[in-house]
Structure formats: structure tokens, C-alpha cells
Image (cartoon, rainbow, N blue to C red; front, top):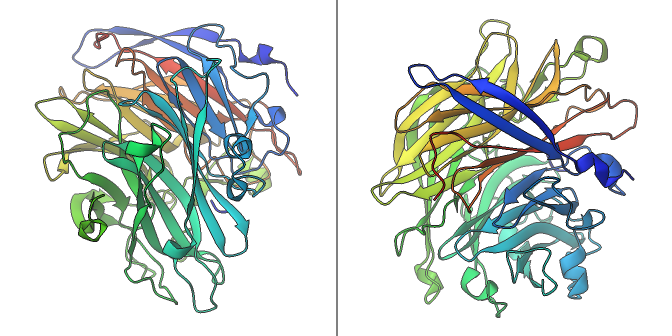
Length: 508
């Protein structure tokens, strides 16, 4: 985790999939997909690409380490810029030297639905033991506008990250970013660079959205850690990778609503335990007037027992077991990233109730079968609790992993994920179902893969499911796949962006 092609390839591919929901009317789903950023499009591709994206009112925007591109939302899905933009661009144009030329990656693209602006956030490191978090906010929802401008910010993070016994700053890995009414929130896993980057804790921060969306001077960020204070010799931390709630419709949370996060509670690392019945719920209350009154608290959620995907009792932070057709000859298995919940945690305010969703990769195979599937949860309530949950799986061979979930304005859930097996090249699929009616998931194919990742176990780390803010119905999903085998020292991954809409959702 830590650590030139013609734009003709962006032309869409249309195909019709007829899908059936048990005990309901037959629904015909038209899935439209087009090519996103591919490794061949960028100057310096990496194995871990942290691919993610979001749909806005005018465009779809994608991030792939360390570049971004945007596309029109209608055929032929024309790219906004001639080539993908270097991730440094907004800060370099603003002369913020701590946020460019630093090799920073792990960026997140978000569309702030309440303010109708784009946000890019990323980590940067100008020097050893020096970290910044860099945020750029657009002044318009239209990335093709001649008046497009980025309000750029650089936040010094080193002081919040803690020091180990060698005096080295803990490495802020796997940053996650989200929009809430009272701030932009971000979380970081803390890893010890002098102990094989072992997880030792987390940091959660809030940034001054109110002033940032108008290009004003941002107040200082507020950050909390767990454990607090951070130890200088940390034990293996089992509650890592916090996912912040992210507003996913145009109705804001009630005034004063706290921000919430969820994280996994991995099995006790005692060499024998393989299952857990807990998740963690984190409550962040910010007080911008009196920062000393801000609070950050952790509580436990009881859930149906699960085994994290590809879990190894001897190495609980290594989750490599996903089969490819080439695995028997190469010995290479893909990372399921099963030791954590996966972004996003979309929030919907339906008026009569508030709903949060999140998903993860779990073991669904039995015996020696290491097959993985998708577990999802819906939280509801003033103090959120698990309202319902379920699994997405089918058959006993196909691995499903790296999910991302969202829901439309009718309460239909859509989760996208990667698939692979000994007989199926890594590809992209999704499933949908009605949360209010509690129907069974129906799976659809978004993109078949035609090649394997033979030279690295590291997958894209995340993917992104978002819902179109203009109609409240259309799901947009982005993930990684391979057209050809990635071999030797090559880096040849591809990304695909797909959208589909359910007949039971009426555009607002």
C-alpha cells in the first residue's frame, strides 16, 4: 500500500445486460463504459495506482497516481485535457513548493455536492520527516470553464503524526478524504518506518471547508490520534484505515450533525484467531470557535462474524491470495486488501432517516478454498448502528475484492469490485439491490479483463462508486483491469469508467 495513446481509446463501448431480481419485475440495464487513464498515458506509472474518481454535475474526474483527468459525461466521453494532468499542477501553478516536486501520491478526487465544486487532496513530503497534506478546491463545477481556478492549500502535518523511538516521524499511509457540512475530513494510517512499516495507530483531521470553498484563508486543521498520545514503540494496531462519511446527495446533514468514521477491528493477533464480530465507529465533533472543545471518540459496533479477506494468522497485515489464471505458473497472487474496510462511506439524508454504507472484502470459501467475497453494511440512527448487512458472492471459484459502495435516491445500493480466479482474468463487476425492500444482489459485468498482473501482487488499493448528483440515480464506477499480461518490469495496467442506472430510480 505504502510505498502515448490516442484519445480514441476513450470512445465508449455499449452493451446490454438483462438482469433479474428475484420476486421483482425484470429490469433491463444498459451499462456504458469507456477507457480512463491507462499506464501508457502517463510518464511515470507505478504498480500501486490508488485509482479513484467521482462524478460531478458536468464531468467525471479520475485520479491515478500521480495524475488526474476529467471526461465529459456523455458520449464520446471526451477528455477535458489533451493528456492527463500531473498531480502537482494546482499547487505548482500557485507556487506552493511543499506540495509539488515532492513525489506525493495517494490522491483523492471528490465532488463537493453541497458547494458544487471539485476537490483534489493528496499527501506530499518535501524532505525526510516532513509531511504536508495538500488540498485544491475548484471555483466552478465545470472543469472546461475558461474561468476555472483552483484554491490551493498546504497543511503541515508532521507535528500531528508522532515520532518513534528513533526520532523518525510515523509515515502517514492510505489517506482517505470526505466532505461533511462543517469541514473536509481526512484520515491517515500511521506506520513505523523503522519497523517494516508496521501499523501503530491512526490520525483523523478536519480542515476548514467554510473558507476553502470561497478561496479564503483556512483556519488551522484540527487533528486527533488513536492511541493518544502516540507511543514511541507501537504494537500492531488492529483498528486502522478509518473511512470518513462522505455526503453523497445534495441534502446536507442536519445542523450540528457530527462526522462519523468506521474502521475494521481485525482479529486478535494471537496466531490462532481468524474471525471478528466487531467494527469501530468513530465520532468527530469539531468546534471551530473553541478548538479545545472538539472531540474524537471510538465505540464498537457488533456485526455478523467475518474473516478478513486472505487473512493469515501469522502475518495479519499481508492479504495476498487472489488467484489469476497465471498464478499456478508465476506463483503471484493479488492483494485482496482484506485487512480494512474500503472507501467510500457514502451518506444519504432521506429526510425520514439517514443512511451510511460501507463495504469490505471477506473470506467466503471454506476449507482450503480462499475465495473472497464482499460484505456490506448499512448504518442508521442518530448514533449510527448497524441496520442491516449482507454478502455479495456467487459460486465457489470467483474472488471478489476491492469494493466500493453507494446508493441512489431510491435507496438502491450499488457496489463495484474487482474479480479474478484461476480461470478468469482480473476484471470489473458490480451488484445492485434495494435496501428498503431487502432484495438479493444482482451481479452485472462492467469490464472483462484479458490479461493478468503477473509481476506484482499489489492491486490498485481502492476503487470508487459514486452517484450522479444531477439525477440522483446513475451509478458511476471506476476500477483497474488488464488488457494484456503485465510481465517482467512492465507496468501496463488499464482503468475503466462505467455507468448504469436502475429502472426503479426516478431522476429528481
